[in-house]
Image (cartoon, rainbow, N blue to C red; front, top):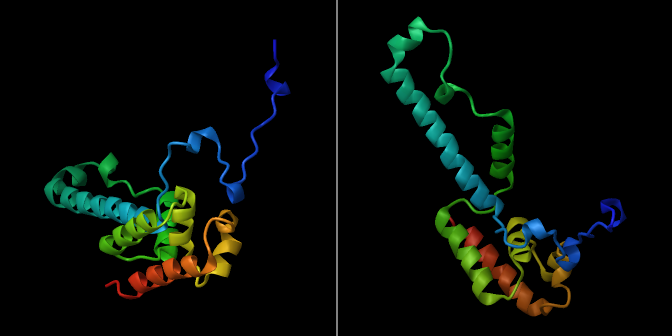
Length: 159
């Protein structure tokens, strides 16, 4: 009977696109996509809080306790939202969709590579290959540069 301690742990290495089994069917999100989702959640929280203040004002005067809907979002949520706001490269839904679609249609890149390119927005192909080593033998520098230029163009024309 094999002991669980005798088994070798799986080596993970993003530079060669080797990820744990838990990530095989997982989708990657761009920081901009996470930002959009979190902004929507934050907006809903503010809206619910406002409506609760108006509708149930007389109940709260009688009770000092706060209901679940009124509680502040967790600090980790707010810090993550700040991070996403700071590092989000694309500011509107149309640009995010256009960049993702362009990367999916023009390349045969792994979903990790697509997210990395869109999140990092490297200026040139050498920088992209230094940051994402799995691209090294996958695409010529000139072809990669065209893709990076397309990303920068979409980024510069967003509202």
